[in-house]
Every structure is written in structure tokens, then in C-alpha cells.
Length: 209
Image 1 (cartoon, one colour):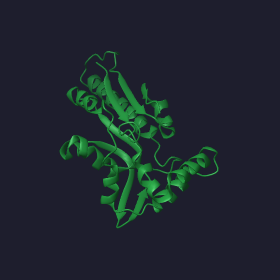
Image 2: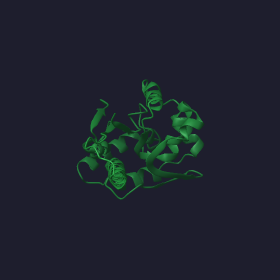
Image 3: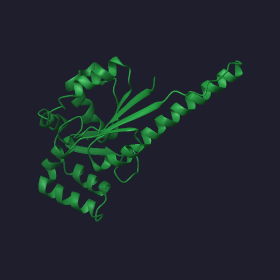
Image 4: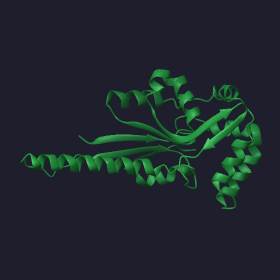
């Protein structure tokens, strides 16, 4: 039986809208944000430069920000998908270039606080003081979070366990069968920042957007 592990993007994949864009648009406006998106695609502006500008212009308290995100719909199939993973003990991680504090609260609305607290959320670190939003990026990659890293680390950890199991059998004088357990990584995403993770995944689900 193969070991299956699922990684999923958040904005536009689990949530049907980009929560970050909703908040950012209150500060810089939709048109300007989209114009900056074009500059990023044309390599005239880096994503990190844009992120710094966007979040520095959000002038909301954290409570006001959360209230704006309340209407954002959850993917209609997510709850049954999550229940399936739980019932089959399939590890699940959210990987995002968004803010951890937003994702945690959003998931608590839909899963409950106890269940949401169990989630593995790999995202940028957000902090709000008054109306000042601050972001600490997960790494120094062009999109603030190289989502492929967590998948590679998972695969490496799995291989390490197999090697250790092989050594234990050899030390015990047991015959080691060459039939190794298979590790299948599933990734779900919808955007440009998901491409690096998509290349590392064994099974890919891409949301049309």
C-alpha cells in the first residue's frame, strides 16, 4: 500500500477567492494591484517588492480584515475531501504564499478551532499591530515561499526512513525484500507560485481559473 501525502495551495484553491488580494485592494485598489501584477510578469518588478508595498498599504485592524474575509467561500468539495484524508490517515499540509494568521482563522471558521489547530500550515508569517500589517517571508525565493522545498523534504525524509528500516533488518539478520513501499505526493494548486511544487509532485490537480 503506497504512502500518500497531500499538499495544497490555499488562496484560490481551498478558498475560492484570494484572501490576500481582498485585503490588499483596500489599500492600493484593484486596478493598481493588477497593474503591478503585469510589471511582475514582465520582470520589471519583483514579487517581493510588490508584496512589501501591498501589505504596507493595508490600513485595517486584524478584526476588520477578518470581517472582510468572512464572505469568502470555501471550495464546495473541500470538507468531504478533508474528511476522506482524515479517515484514511493521509497527511495533509497547506502550502501558501499568503499569511499564516489569515489561513488559520479561515480554516477555523470551516473546520472548527480544534481541528484547524491540528493543520500543518506552511506560509508566510503575518503580524498585525493596530492597523500595521507586517510580513516575514518564509524564505528568500522570488515568490516569498518556494513550495517545492516542503515536497522535496518530505520525499527525502521518507527515503531516509526506508534506508533505516533496511539497516535494522540487515542487523537483525533478516532477509530484506527489494519491494519498497511507494511514496506518492499529491499537490493541488492554481497559480504561478504553485509551479515549482507542481514539478515535484507525483499527482497534480490544477484548478481552472
